[in-house]
Each structure stands twice: as C-alpha cells, then as structure tokens.
Image (tube, rainbow, N blue to C red; front, side, top):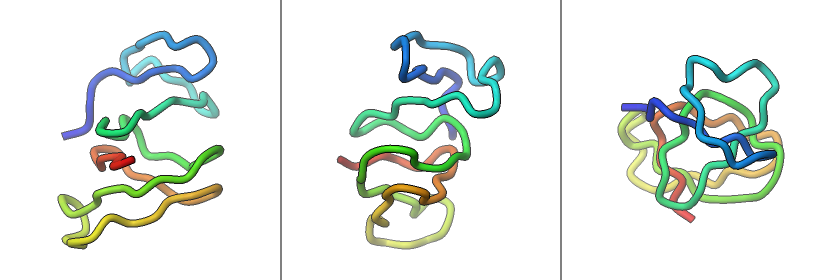
Length: 75
C-alpha cells in the first residue's frame, strides 16, 4: 500500500522509492502516504496508522517520531 514514488525535500524531485538512499530527507504532504519507513526530522502532524496497527484515531508524530510506509499524513 506504500506509494512507489517519493518526493525529495531538498529538490522537490519525484523519485522511485527504490532509488532513495539512506539519510535522504523526503517531503510528505497532507493527504499523502508515507513512502518509506523513517524518522520525522521536521514538523508535526497526525498520521493514520489504522491499516497497520488497527488504531482508530490518528497518531501525533513530531521530531524523532518513527513513521511507517503506507501510513497517511492527515495534516
């Protein structure tokens, strides 16, 4: 369920998730799915994880929070 493309934050370029290198910072806009497992390095949002965890309410993510591929950035 994870997207096959990711947006590189520095350039705005869309790249295949298989081409993303470790430590690349990605941008995930509201309503978009997180393309790869990672750690939040900037910002704060609510993420819908119900397809992975069954949690019915969005989970707050902020600096150093773990995010999983396929979850949805709600805001």
